[in-house]
Length: 391
Image (cartoon, rainbow, N blue to C red; front, side, top):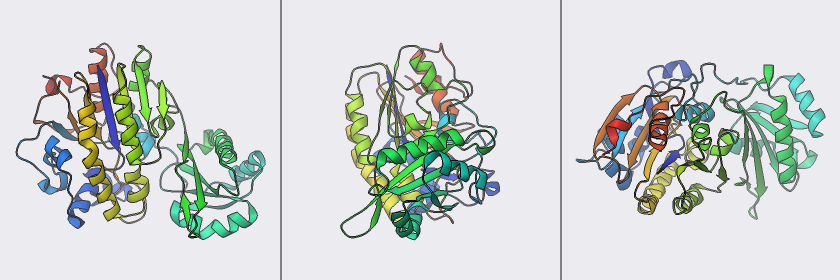
């Protein structure tokens, strides 16, 4: 038996009750996309995406959904990638990862220079695409790397790979990861390589790499891999969990590449979990507040969804969900605290099962763990809905 999870990174379904305290009152990623674009996603709609409570105001609902569907509130404190994925897999983050809205302390940055041998410029909150344009000339002239952060707990290092070779950039980030502990704790260090194209435009490459902290306790991934089941991750999942519980990791260059590699994994013969993150929705369109690009990316995913479903074997079940919001009509450039969606299908699942609104993302991981271990293992938090959805 296998379960497949595909995370459509940042496809939120509307503000959580406490969204205002995060500066996210009125956020609604899917709803605002539908407000501004004639979205055509017939395959996700047929499974039940539009029938989820308050999803896009019911404008995407169908008469008889073929799958299971529901929305999930975030139990953890925060709205970042690690917190969302960890909660899906069974961990509640009660103390949010530290953020650096005024940049990183000088003492830390002095240590960074000493251990990396590179100077830096920036050290401020910024959009990644904008900062390489603002500081690119200086970086390329001096060799100093560009350091920046966001509303999330991230230490990002950008560099032109003709100035700082990719492996050196990775080494710089690995060294920064060791510094960012204790009083300087930080959720992720991210290498952000870019290049200059023939047209002179600076473009970030697909060689991004994340250096995360390890989960503080066992997750769904650990529970499955310790039983000898395969945990096959596609995209940045392995980075998010710092490799914990992962038996095979495949990185990707784009959403389309991630879909292809997920299908390749489904076509293999093994028991366990395939866990995919498709980050383009978030990184290329949500953070850049690009409604049209986000909508088109959803349509491209939906067009390939039949390929994914056709690849499923008899006992396979597939769940699609998100990990937070990133409303492309919201102010700023950061994630938004929203409900996430989950829809699922497979020969073993019932049709037209409305899960309603559930209290934690962790119910997803709890259900998958229940299914794949026949109830013998349980995640730290989360309530399984296995009994509701299986035939």
